[in-house]
Image (tube, rainbow, N blue to C red; front, side, top):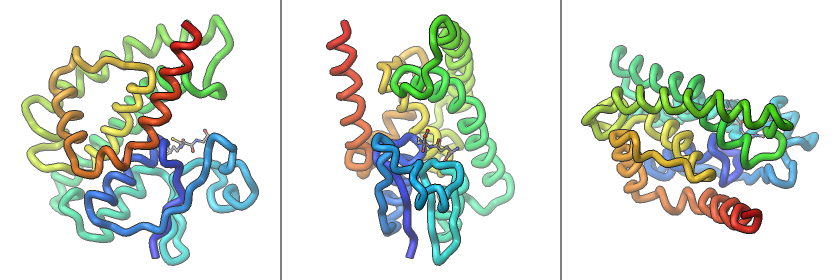
Length: 222
Ligand SMILES: N[C@@H](CCC(=O)N[C@@H](CS)C(=O)NCC(=O)O)C(=O)O
């Protein structure tokens, strides 16, 4: 049995939920409610000392880190979304690292979480300064991604790979702060391709619920 401990709105879980749904991979789903701090409890901390979701359990084997989990699941079912060819696989790994180490840091932590999650928010003037640092960095990274994607439908080529699942969850986290992707047309087209996947709406329902709550709060403050 494959069990996934997850929060349905979490950026690092959405990629796995989407991949599993599209690949028809049945998962035993265990919700860990981040908003009520369930991940800081004793039982969950024993499972993942980092107190973060996602966590995969497969016959006693425990695996954390969304990128590693996607690779594990794709290999488990010999998925074409994680090609076996050495160079094709290296390209997928390259893009997953690119998303995970660069874009994730600047967009998710630097701009999005800093606004919508109180424990990532710096006291002023640090908050405004951090946004000033991350905004141009995000723009530079998206400019690069736009060039990398070019006319291709997916980040690594004609076919969808697990890099698309990982990357699209990170990029769409920007929707929580109304981040506009229109300056990067190839990125926008790629995200539209991902949103056209049959499972997208259902998998992302909780995320869009969170987005609506953030929007409602912003309107109240305005
Ligand atoms: N690098 C990890 C990051 C995991 C992570 O930070 N998950 C978030 C949810 S998106 C979390 O559980 N946060 C708990 C917290 O910040 O206290 C991965 O890709 O799985």
